[in-house]
Image 1 (cartoon, rainbow, N blue to C red):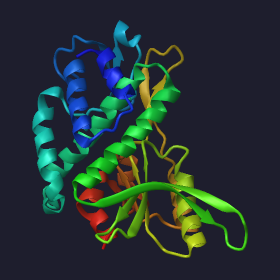
Image 2: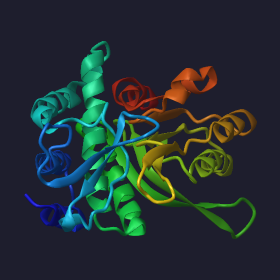
Image 3: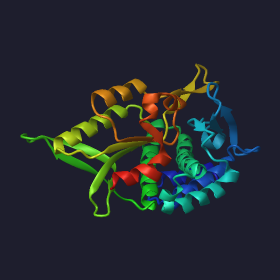
Image 4: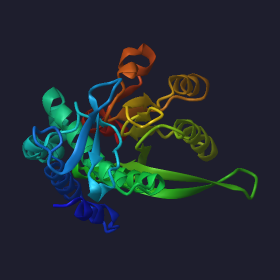
Length: 299
């Protein structure tokens, strides 16, 4: 496996099933050997200066010596451990409601999805084209989450919807990344799937308010995010750290002054969220959505 081959796989726009994401993560881990004692195919494993659990991979000539996005080593699975984690993940999804009290398996599920998505993102970073990488990475995240939810046995949809504004000829467009359906294919909850809340969180709150107001309904809205961290470099690009992109003030203001979201979930949850009583009550790790909350939505 080469970096060139990995790039070819992520630039291929053919339909991807959940097994593709798992296979790709396994191939990426085998190539980089991230977290292992010997990593012959990468230039360096750079440790973040301000939060040491975050690392950056620097590629060799084949990756133009690019440095990847930050990787949370507490979540990103080592190459030597991925096959076992993958089996637990695949065995658990069809029986996801049965693992409510199995905290270890729930952590593994989060880690497998995080590893799959970050393997794609880090590969795209070798393109050295941030706009292209951002768009493709976001599309992959949507597909990955939808495939995971379907494998758990939930009927879903995703679509753009045009809603008429009352007493006018005007309309408003809503983009639904995922819609949870019940056994009768009735829409029960609408979700947004984003790699980060940066520049998006305001719109998600507003979409719930406007959609429910215009359609005169009260359908739950939720959001699923990968993480809220980005790379921070010093002036000479020699030292790397991370910045948080989560805006607690915006989240609290929209929750209180406009309307609360019915669920917010992260694969990589910031420690500051867990320590804040207001935020901790409203923002959870992704396993909570799979194991408990999405089943409540479709009742």
